[in-house]
Each structure stands twice: as C-alpha cells, then as structure tokens.
Length: 212
Image 1 (spheres, helix red, strand yellow):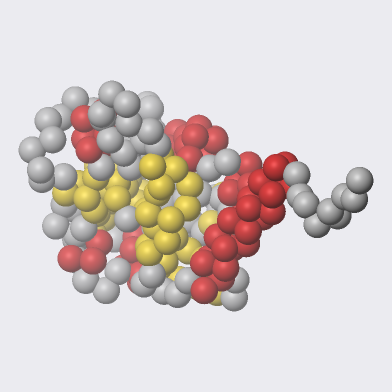
Image 2 (spheres, helix red, strand yellow):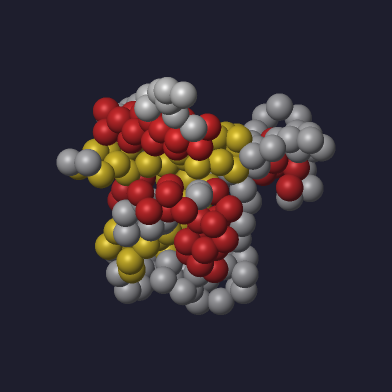
C-alpha cells in the first residue's frame, strides 16, 4: 500500500496554525505605529453571567525600534494606589505589585508575557510640590508619570479615560452610560500620601488623591 508522505496529522496542522497565528500577531506588532490601536492580552470587561475575557485594546504612545510603549484604551479595573494610607512611592506601592503580579498573570499568557520588555522606570519628584518620586524601578507594566502624560497626550481630550462596564460595576457603581473616570499616574501628589492622576476631563491632577 502506497503512503502519501505529504499527508499531515491533525497535531501537525494544529501546530502550524498556532505558529501562523503567532507570526501574524508579531507582524501586527512590528507594523504598529504611534497612534495605532492593537489588541494584546485579555481581561474581563463585561458583567454578563456567561461573559468571557475579551481582547484588551491598547493605544501605541511611542515606538523605539521594535519596542512599543502602550496604554490601555479603556480603564480596565479600579484599584487603590496603595492599600494603606501612608507615605508611599511608586516603588513601594501596592498597585505596582498588582500590575506586575496578579494583573500580569490574569491578562497575559506565558507567550505574551515573554514579549513584554522589562523597562527601567524613572521616578522623578513632583515638580510643583517637590514630593519624592523615589527610587527608579525595573518593571514590565507601569503607570505613566506626570511628565510622560504631558508628553504623550497633546490635549486634555486625548487623555480622557473611559472605563469598562466591568470596572464600574466591580466597585459597586451603576452603569449609567457615563463611564469617564479619573485615573492614576505613578508620580507623587502634593503630599507623600497622595498620588497624582488625570481628571475626568483629561487635565493633569498634580495635587493628586489620597493613595488608599
């Protein structure tokens, strides 16, 4: 009986399809430009009983060589900057730990995690109030600083953040259709127990909010 050497098993076909999907995904990343929107990772964004995690949309803020600086298009969750009301910097904050541990594991598979570059994150002082930014850190995921927010968003309108339904309902609010939200920056606020952020209308809040 003659055997066709070109016949592939189901496992071989599946493997090739997976490699093709990965290659297509990498090509999309490589071709992305500043201002583009790409999908990367998954997270809960709906509160429907049978809802599954869906793709996270990211805006490309900057591109240097093959490295992209991304920010999520929507506010994905509500978390305190720090679980305790105390003097804190980005280095010691609980939100930094959550982003690089729990969120990392929840939102990205092992392959995607390998694609996220570890970055040396500089933490300057608050220029207005002279509060301490703390030590520089090494992070895969980080919040923007005041300086970076001013650099990458050319207008208040561009920096307005809209949260997902999941994020709104997850903290006990009703989804009334208006999901514009204040969002954290990693810079300190006017005192060391405050962290800076961005107002609902997109303006920089360098006074900040209490961290818890």
